[in-house]
Length: 158
Image (cartoon, rainbow, N blue to C red; front, side, top):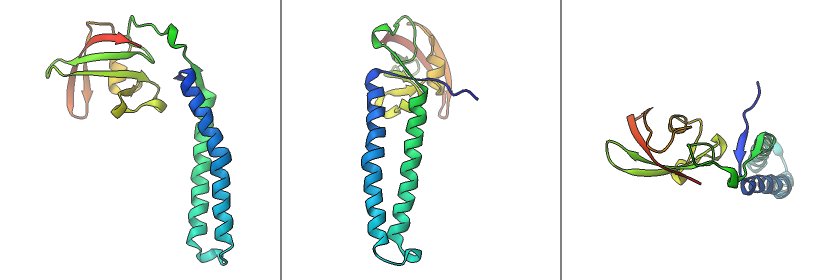
């Protein structure tokens, strides 16, 4: 199964690389030190600190592997080449809820970068899928857990 590309800016790529370095060097060192300190306490069979440190080590290694997998799938987007003719990856779209008149603005991003509270929605989310390739003036109906959502594309930008 081929993994889909994760579209990111150069800045986000740098942040991912920085996080991997931080986890590999400082994270591993800190956990190794905690494991050594817990070992020094004696009997490992009933040592809660040792068990907790080993579990934390497993979670750290899992996080490193996940971040490296993300890095392997990254495709860099040049923000200067992002088209604002239609809604696409890395565009910011302003929509109006037809029923309530409320306006919202979202940036369309890959699933790994999604942060709904921060206004960054995944291209693979119901709203992201419905808005993708739409142009200003288009109206979409989206089935969401709360019911049907009617949105009208008001503006597309970077």
